[in-house]
Image (tube, rainbow, N blue to C red; front, top):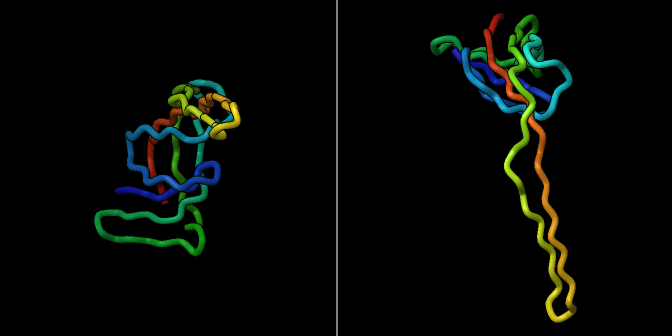
Length: 103
């Protein structure tokens, strides 16, 4: 059984007991979260598609940690002008354990 759920504007395909790195969400470590924007549920081949969401369906999870992603280097250069800028960025994510999918 899997579901496609929208978390903070991004869509994720989730199954039970799976870890998802979603964009940073508010909440303490160990807090439970509930996602109500379920777009699709597949239960052993029986697919139910929402228009746009499935009414009454929800995905339950638990916040495990707030982490940072890998560093992304941003390097800008204009040739023959002596212009070089090096910047870095680390995106913040929330690690969520999917506890269950219910309809």
